[in-house]
Amino acid sequence: MKTRDTLLRPMMVLTPDGLKEINIRDSRTATLISRHDQAIKHFLETGDDSQLRKFRNRGVRVGNQRYRFETDPKSLEERARRGELSFESIYASVT
Image: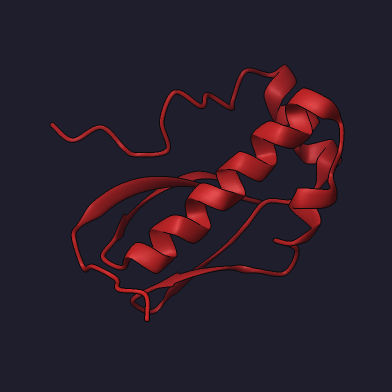
């Protein structure tokens, strides 16, 4: 059985409406966001959208709010061209 934790993690998630900072308290949700982030990076580096397809029509729910993952290749390419995507870290800065 895999364990999980409930540590607070402010994270960034890319949605069709742009980057959103959300507070995650579930390690499984944090892992899902991280995998989505890696799929975006893979697509932008290679043009291969096979990993992105796994996230179509998926997202995460935090409280009563649902955040749908951005998976549209054209949108991702456009956001990257405009410099909207920065992948130093998916973890939001804590001040």
